[in-house]
Amino acid sequence: MYFSIAFIRRTVIARTSKATALAVANAMLDKKALDVQVLHVAPLTSIADYLVLGSAESDRQTCAVADSIVDALSRLNQRPLSLEGTTSGQWVLIDFGDVVAHVFRQDARSHYALERLWSDARHIPISDKASAPTPETKERLTRKARS
Image 1: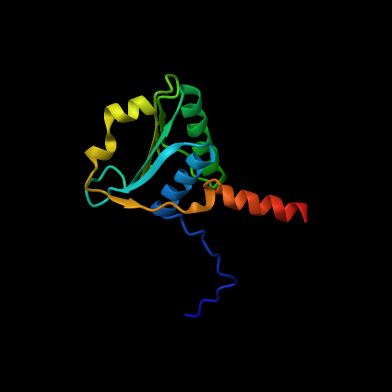
Image 2: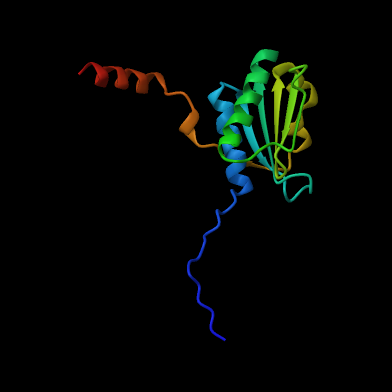
């Protein structure tokens, strides 16, 4: 029997959990979250592959960071499975299945100390793409714009 394939439809490859975790971290940095960390917890637990932790200076900023994460990942066709803590704004948890994001107000983060709880987890470096330029870079860009 002979089968002819008229066309082969390529399926979109799902984002890896590491790429999702880094997208969450960059969304946090876009809203000026502090001390953003990506922890690889897959070898330690079955809850998630990655935890992404970030701090904010106020309840309002905590909610803004959480909104930024949801918006950024929605544009990548990834909706959160669960979103908790937006009413209080002290600790917002966003569950994407294989990646769990925690956005804390600074005092809440130091109180719960998740980094200490997951101290055996490997830290994943975050790209400098979303970080603010240094003063030297700003000066160079200003000089370039004037010329």
